[in-house]
Length: 504
Image (cartoon, rainbow, N blue to C red; front, side, top):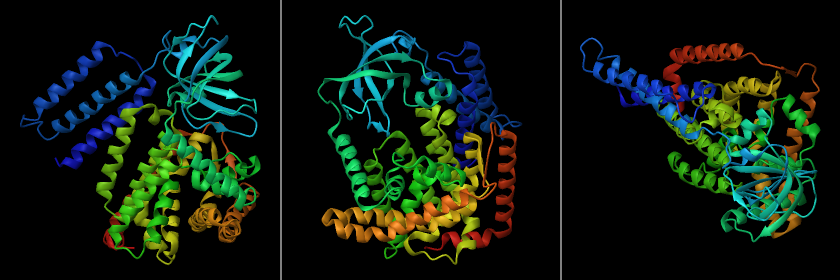
């Protein structure tokens, strides 16, 4: 048994067990469960020295270890409402809650979402504050005053449990209750991190510069590409993006960050092949902090880095194992990511596509120029969509028939739009007219992207909506795709290895 195969067996058993335990979560599992798992592990370890079972017993022992870790992980992260947690008080009645704004507020045209931490509740209104665990999501429909990250505020409103589907999304961030604010007021000094406050201010300044340099909806689209913000995008354009399968380009995902990384690596063509990785990783780390370094962005950066390794190094076995270790570490930290985080699931699927499909697609795209990372961005987009698109159908109930065409049409211009969007902000900081001149190529690319989305969305039958997608069809698709990948690899293994090993 090789170390890589042993690790793969352990990691896969852990991930699969955690996935199945979403239907059986408990803060304390019955003793019989631990009894069965312990004896299974002991017997399989003993079987490792038996002449009949010594070949298969180590695999079974590793699988038992993975399952045991899965039970421990789910048990450690299970949550039950109590008087000590905020959802233990969420009975729909009017409440007064005091807390600190934990992240950059999500400002929309008609409302603002605040996430509060370090919560205290005053149930009697007498000024006696009771500390409670968990976070609170507050919806504020008032235009003024505005509050910022780190502000200590007191909120009055009806404290409720979120709807079941929404609760799954919120629970990933330890948000256990929601409130629509009747009144929100400052109740203390700002206690946030100066570092993150500066990052949020920098991002707001950056998006403000884009608004000066580009008209709408180009400014909002540029912000979506560069910071993941969707705040100013018109509802009609968002609907068109959904219809043609382009919403992934305006979210900070593993695929999106991979495109950024390949763009940076393409600009460093004058460096030796492997030396490009160091400045690329440094740049993507800076980008991760720039957009806020939230858990989802950090996850995307890690998965995107693995995607870049899959594209540039071509060492599939090592990349597969790195993906499994990364996914297992994220799941161990928060198993809800595997159960309910569509972003995590899509990033994981996309990186698998980059690892497994890139070597097959690479020979087909050899005629695409490498300038500004065009070939790599097109390659990563198509490879990621092959594995992520069916999961998108399952998660969101929307199947875009025209998505492959739309992605092929826009993929080459995305890195150009991102590059000139960033350069125009730098130039506009020095002199606004210069920034607008530099922004012109970016505007043309953004116009092309919106034009493609609007045109293809009008094609009859471009997309279909499903009330409930079939998981059987999803499994069948992946089985067929896996069969194609394995068959092509067996037929073309020497050619694939040669192309993957050749420096760009």
